[in-house]
Length: 443
Image (cartoon, rainbow, N blue to C red; front, side):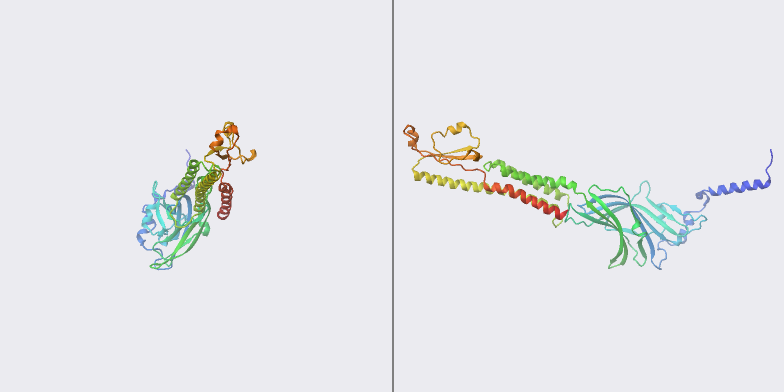
């Protein structure tokens, strides 16, 4: 076996040493603790960086993971997002030959200073903790820090329902430092509008997400001073198709159903009354169902206008029949008095009244044999229902062979009232005009 020259052995040893250093596990090579690497024990991290000096800049960027829900009743929204902070703390600087950062989990956060950002007008919020706390801390050798967390927050959203359900809503998620005023901490969007990123798959069942954008301003508290406040604004436009199927179409059909009573015989009291009451109760149910899913606001909503106008149309159709029925009763009372007065003046002791509809048979007509008709109605003008008034003296009835000495009066009264005729045109025409105005204003 031949021996290698001494200089080759030295070259191989240097190469192996270089490879072993390159693949060296820092967790095994570092004999101290993380606190010693970042010099945590040597500083007081209860105070902000550059304490007593100028305000420390803290940049913020956000990535919206999901917009979980929008509640009209509670006037709030729920959002899940990644919240990241950027600042420089020279107390965390460390020496590094390769200028690479060091990444830690949430256990180190409790030992160093981090910005005390909170969500203004937040109702509930929490940091996800499955499988561990979703917190990441990245420290660079020069002391720059990236602090990221995954948060779900439910915040208030002031909504205006005056145009509901043809409305658009703008909601804001507000971030602010709780303890540090603008003299101690300057909170800002790290890259302007580019600081806000959203997932393209974000969608809601009732809303179309139109846009996200960021703003910032100062907020003043009389007791503590001025604070930097950041806003995540997003605009939502409501989908109308659901409400067309659940609210507008049923209400319109109920109004149209109430018009059917105008074509029903005015003497069919049970049919017209039951139809009117049914449509009124159905409209009341629709109105109650819509308001049950809405907050109790003190102003009128667009859907309220449509439903209550529809309710008025249905209610007026019931009142229309009440007027028709009353006028019919008054008219019949006057005609009865007129017949009695005419019978007395002609000396006719008895009278008969018969009701015939437009489809009376030949046997019904033969029952009138022997009576002379003073008034006839042409075939083409035969009404749906006629009232035949027959008056005959007993004397002429008993002595038909001696000739007709009696008097027969035939009177035909049309049963369709003039109010029904006008209502068949006025109600649909007015409702169509209302719909044209309504949809042109609120669309």
